[in-house]
Length: 340
Image 1: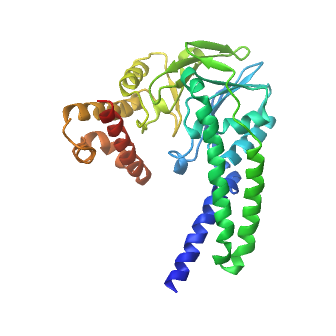
Image 2: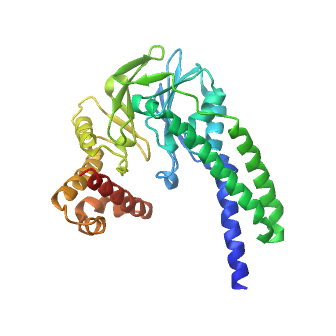
Image 3: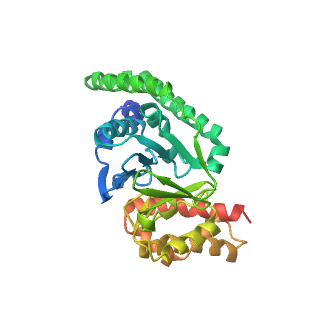
């Protein structure tokens, strides 16, 4: 009896994996909130429980063109956003800007490119250099979805009979969506950023700057004469340093903190920030760098245990922060130690 219950539980987990990723996404997307920063800038904030798993988006619209910053890793949510934009936009969607190469910012561009084929993908020069890797990542992600669906079908017989019809319908929808996404492709960028660039959307300018901080190929966007910063994961309150260029990242955060013009900071994950709040991620990244430098003989496990409690304490006020901060800390320590 215990084994049978275990089989049912395992089967349900696989069904949930396939259908959560592929089928039930519109209800997840509905929890994304639209926040008006100013008449030209809309902040699409991911729901709090997904803030470390999926990204925010930003929509900027001028009198002639619109620009979208980043896409969700949830392809069904990207499709829903694409449909919503058809109702919301007063101008053509001309630009798709990926702040960096991570899946939850870049891969959904394949879906958006299908809906808006005239929109130009904009990336950092380093992302462009390695773009074939991200095209492969898109197909690999779909292969993973396909295997999950196949496994779910195999295990459907172990699900209680009264539940099977419901799950079969969900899997059918998931498979239909998968086939559609397999027809899409992540098309190459048309605009590659290697220096500061201003784009005029029609009476409203945005400034794109290449950075090396959260990754070696970041883009930041500023608007409203430098008062609004769309910083991607560079300005996350709890930053992931596993792929970061930590020294230049710290320098950049200091620049933002001391920027008198800057008033509104939009991160890749979580809610908007003030310059004062940027001091916490700066403290976290600085402590990681210094801790490894001052304790070269310690293992990662020892570095984790001896890491300054005062730095990590602000991240221990909520369960999801605790889990993520431990993982992010380990990734950061590994990053710095491997660079020694």
